[in-house]
Length: 138
Image (cartoon, rainbow, N blue to C red; front, side):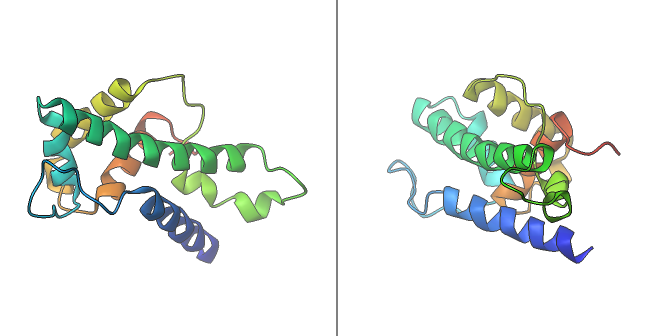
């Protein structure tokens, strides 16, 4: 169980590093980076907002995909036990997709789960993508 929390903490730390700390120039004051904020950004019809939305989601997806690949195929003598918890936070067997497809996956999830949009920006994206491409079956 402790390994699961360590893996989740590791994933969130990497994801937080991937999220830009500067805001798009068109937005003022600084946004509160919640799933609700990202949902509204992704629903926008403004090109710069859509680009920012896709950048956030794509960055998080890249980290989750990396963790999923490490879970599925540990390399360099890394034990399966060490990477086992990555299956709880990564995404696996991701089909080739583009930023717009990732955006639609997130929007669909966020529309079905308005009660979960108050959490942090990375959490909502993680859940949406994990439901689409889980590493572990429920």
